[in-house]
Length: 540
Image 1 (cartoon, one colour):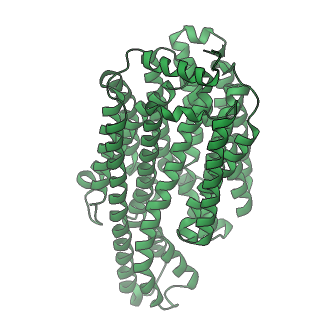
Image 2 (tube, rainbow, N blue to C red; image 1 turned 180 degrees about the horizontal axis):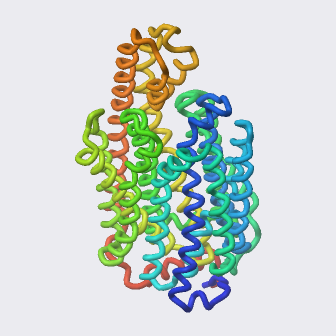
Image 3 (cartoon, rainbow, N blue to C red; image 1 turned 90 degrees about the horizontal axis):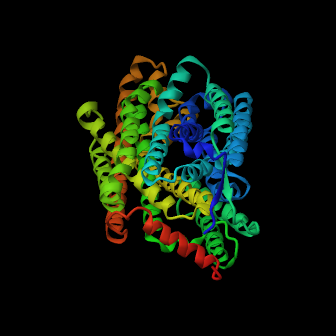
């Protein structure tokens, strides 16, 4: 079986240096994941200064997601070939440079273009982080701890986006959410060059250009159709046509990967349930987590009327719960097995989603809202560590980059689906109940543009509250705000139950199909790796 080239080897011999490299890798991961969430807090400020509507603000977020998800597989494979550290460093340079471009942009088009380019370079960084960890840590226990730290950092970065963005906006303009990336990228770049060893595959073969093109086109079209479905309609010709074309390209990609001699992704890996079942668990876990964060954002800022900074502080327990759950679960899985730990984590997430669906306008934070956040986040943290370790432990070292990209792609697509599906449910409830009320409001109280904003999102409550009105209209405004909050909560309750059903169903599937028990050492995984290599090279 082929092995990976790792240089310099001294970093693999000293435990403290291995964990120093891990800290640097986690910093690079923090930059990528944090940038995926921090900009959300700045959207209202960007919209006011650049005079754009809801669709423009949506693309500030979606442009990053689209390019990021579409290019993960391609960059994972290129990292295996060209060197994972090298590709990650190129990505760090690109993220920093495009952050400067975004900060200096004076138009919505410039901001969207910069965000799309940032997604491209972030896709170069993210698969390399996990692939490097797998090649640096060979001891199963140390690898479990390293993967636990990696998964905890991912969840932590997602959750601290609101508080860091809120603090920046309290002191600076919206440009600061781009400028903050520059020193982080520079520090991560220098530290990577000094402390992170290079690794690459020794068995590369020909570059699978067709596979790269099919994967980029297929995943991009599928993700685009998901993102735009709430705007065009889930059953519209645009959504169905784009989604069908993307699905057809994904199928073509799978068929091509099964027949080519040098695939960017070894599809036969999915025959191994220790690879496929955890991948499903991660996708559903992120479906619920991204969707839950969307619902919580609506609740704290639209219903509770928190400022961005207050929202960030209130969501801190979510971050800490993910950070605690991931490393603890990795150690538990080594003692009790992967299947029961992942299934337990999914059930805990389902409990958190159910409790979140019971929250009302006046629910106490400590007794009602906090437990929902803690259970939800703890559950996802418990799923992430063991699932990621099982996925990466099932791979030959030569395919660590591509396997990491699969792990990352399932997260991104699951998260995108979570926001799109649960967000669409909330939007449907909200719009159908608020639209009739908006039509009866006189233009002396609210302009046409303000009506469109109120009808589009419950987050407009804060702006509606600030607007000066004659005392005669105060009662009407309060009645409208109560109706907006009630409609948003009704949608959130249904969306929470849908997400809870998804994670509980996934828990049952994992419990039934994922092998139970603890593998003895690395024997099971090594046997699978040997079989995978033999499938690719019958002469072996």
